[in-house]
Structure formats: C-alpha cells, structure tokens
Image (cartoon, rainbow, N blue to C red):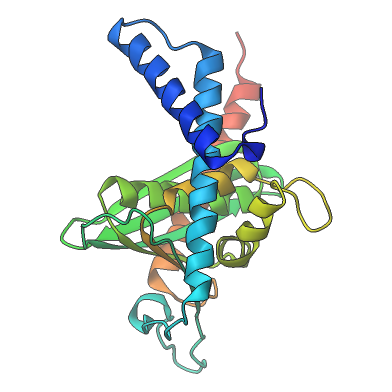
Length: 260
C-alpha cells in the first residue's frame, strides 16, 4: 500500500474520490466492500484529516490568542472545611475548519481505573449537554492499563457528545497524560509519524487518533482537575470506573473457574 503521507494534495483528493466512487458502487449493488478498498479509504481519510488539522492549527497559531473564558464553575473542586481549594488547569484546543452551525455545548467528565497496571480496568464518562438529560457511559476490560482506560473514557464521552451535535465541548479529567497529550504532545506526534521525541512508537496510538478525529470541526477544551479532592463528578466517575474494573475482574475470575 502506498504511503499517503507522501502524496501531493491534489493527488490525495483524486485518490479519495476514486475510492469513494468504488465504495458507492459496491453499496449500490449490495456487495461487500473489499477489505483492500476499505483499508485504503480509511488510510486516505486519516491522512486528509491530519493535513486539515495541521493546517488549521498553523492558522490558529498565527492569530493572537485571547485569554480563555473562565470556567471555574465547571472545573474547580468545591471548598471543604479545613482544606485549601484546589486549582484547576484548563487548556483549549480549537479547530476552526468545518465547525457545525449548532451552538449546543457539552461537558464531559471522565475517569479511568485499573486494578493493577496492567490488570482489569474500567472507565466512566458523564456527559451533560445543554437542553438534554445527563448521560453516563462506562465499561471494563479484562487486561488493560490505567492510561488506556483514561483515554477510553474520554473517547467514549467525546463520541457521545459529538453524536448529539455538540459543537463546544469541555472534557474534564484528572489525567495529566490525557490533557497534556491532547493540548501539546499530539501535534508533534502527528508531524513525526506517531513517533515520540525519542523515535519510539506512541503508546495507545489508536485511542489518540480516535480522540483527534472526534475533535475535528468543533471547539474542544481539555481541563485538568486534581483527583480525589471532593470534585463531585470526578468522584462519581471514579466510583463507576472502579466498579466497572471490579466487574471485569470478576468476569475474568469466573471465566477461569468455570468447568465444563
């Protein structure tokens, strides 16, 4: 398969159009799309998204930035007796290209947990969208890592918010790995072909790519809060993520103890 990252823009668009036409022909005749065409289409789409994202990022950096709006009500922990209030760190990544006309906003609270690292893990995302009822998504995995669960929680919560046409989304997490990755590291990873500064493959690449794709065409803010200090949504996400991890561990135990 050709390296799409080396193709010129016009050549890449021509290739994408041809692949789309081929895919459309298979749908029209109700025949399965060949795997090779599907893989090529996914690769070309990913490369197009990457180029569009990098181009918009360059434009954003060329425009003087304004101070971010205060979101203290969303990301700061409530005050507790005898303890100083914890500060929240907020960073924003905005992609201007193709932004939907919808003005709905969403706040996504996320957390991941792992019983051992690696070990059975769980994740949870609480999604609040303006004018809609709260939604909660959670799940577990028999063998995973804490970082994988943190990214999975964000990806599932962000996917749900995007599916409801939210155009302004704030993701709140106690994972510095997630927040720094999406506001700083991901740009360098994309330029380096998903390699770290040391030339090593980026861990959890699939999840980072999913988060990157979901962030396209909308304003996404990534906010860090200190965990386990009484932040209501963070504590609730943690409880549900741990419960999902415990369920995954329990299912794993039953699997190995089951006798035929």
